[in-house]
Amino acid sequence: TAEIRDLTMLLRQIDVSDALGQARRLLVQKEPERAQEVLADAMQMDSTNSMVRFFSGIAHCQLGNYDDAAYLLGQLAKERPGDTDVRIALATAYLGQGKMADANKELTEAIKLKPARREACYNMAQLLLVMSPPDAGGAKTYYQKFLDAGGKPDSKLESRMQMAAPAQ
Image: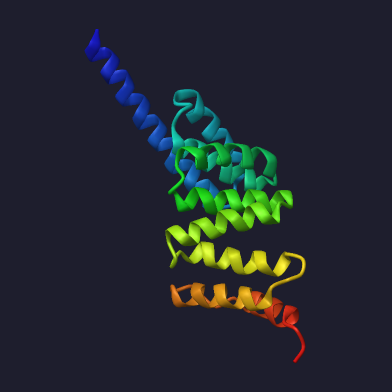
């Protein structure tokens, strides 16, 4: 009956929601293998759930599976072009693949959408330092935006910016 179908769907949504919470905790704890196991189960319950695919993309990034991450996150970016979290994660996957221009494009778009987004500004500062040639001035600008948005100073990044800065 319709009531049983509705109840089954509700229970499935609760299970997926629980799985997402567990996967998020595992990703924060840097346990992507375990997160992927949880997410695989959630994917079987609801393969269209965008958060399941998003967290799976992040887990792939943490595992160094950048091709899989870029595929999942790229599809999600097409579905949700205004989602800065997806664009930042996709930029990470592109960086892992060595696709600097694509990473730059995604971070630029994320910053256009949300100029004070700390993660996007920080990642852009890092990206500009690994591009060839490094853009220390641009990195410094984005790092300052990161700090202005409430980010905590990063002495390692500051040191890398100093080393990349042209001699005066």
